[in-house]
Length: 119
Image 1: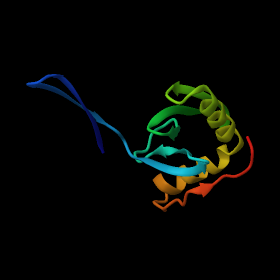
Image 2: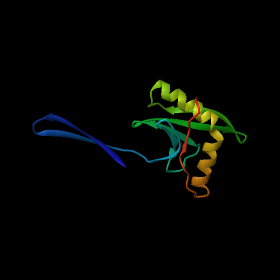
Image 3: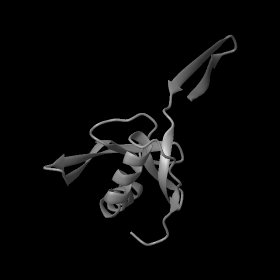
């Protein structure tokens, strides 16, 4: 998917900027905050939080087969949404890992789950 913006310099000149945006596989929807991963497999597992075109990227770090840490890789969301994203990923990490395995290992579809509990 490509996003583009057009800026007008003067009557005869336009600047068109194209940016490639990778499609996200959503696993959770928390009141418009979409949480999932990109449609291409990546290791370590990278989780994306997206709202209104802004994205934050997290990485799941494992040690001895257990989730050790959730690290912030790329900021994009505002501070409130970023805090929510971290809380949701930490509380639902096993479900996110299971969804990642279903998509990339077993080639199964994932249905987006609507989260309504408070974080």
